[in-house]
Image 1: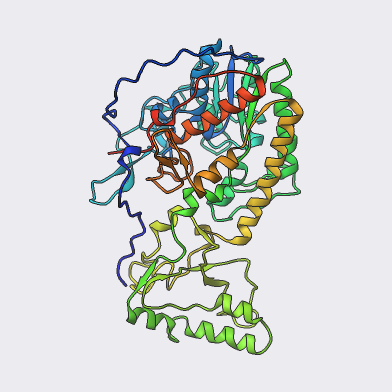
Image 2 (image 1 turned 90 degrees about the vertical axis):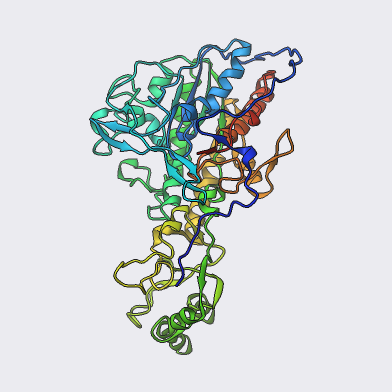
Length: 503
């Protein structure tokens, strides 16, 4: 079988959405701006504090680094707020632009990704070098950007989440450990202690993201409000999410602070789930014939047919589970699907496998193994072909339903509580759905789309926005703030920020 390449075709590569990692893009002198009468309206931006996870911190390209933190949406908001009385905005900066970090001299966080053409074909690679950020070097705050990559909703109120001693055993978060006020502090407590006059809250994405990106390996904890029993990839109980979110807003508004909150995007619409097709397998005639023969999947298919003829399974299930390959491009990968009916009691060889369909979402990282040998010593052990892909590489329709159900509940909670507390509300879910479906046209006529790397909206990890994507979202936050608080604020121009770092 010929080598399978799943990395992207960059025909018509959009260099206008990129920037060289070392050399800033050329700029022209802009015309003098027309003076505007900016106003804070009924809001007080003098002490703005942002709470959230990686999306608030400015995480992109699979890391947190200085340029990304500078291009975070809260920093963009703070820049606009400065025109109407906003104060300084302190950020717990990483030590460099590599993004990697050490604990006790041992590297525990990897460097950021950059698009490299060194191999002749564009590919995301880690930036070389050893990061100078040491997690145990605790920074002196307070900090206005309280975004903590990896945080779930309940982590914002978890004592010890920033305890350096807990980082090696997974009991604490390395990013928060760098700037927590003391080992037993909470993110919310450190935020409230600053007595913010205005806040932003964007939290909850990680309450479902880990389940999705792991191909549904976690547990849907709906109905279980005890977060101490959760695994890292579990879906948070919507009832617990509502309780936590209510408490967060209660604490943040207790002294009269106003703020803006955002709902959560559909994680299945991001490039991490839309880049790798379900049918990327090219086969020659001989290989396709072998796979369809009794030495391949022929015996498996015959066993299914016998069960259907005996009335044990329906014709629909037979069709869904039958595996067939054809010469040429476009063959679907074979996957393990734990939601299929267990037929091994009839025939131990009839394990839960089938070929993927367009409804299945292959995770971005699956491209690293599809077409490779599962056993280097066995040339017939081809991942995704003769060796089915494990559950962690695919988010099946049933798993997508679990994600969608939790997302809908979380977003209903967020919008209802925003209305209850009189806060500005940003529908990021709708915005990013538009990016994914039709794209959003910018002022120069170019578009931000959800296409991996060339679309300009997302960074190279396929999950987090690029600086330009964050610029788009910051503009939407400002619009919501203006509407709710009768404010007039400077705009954010997404084109002022890069869509992609290249090397």
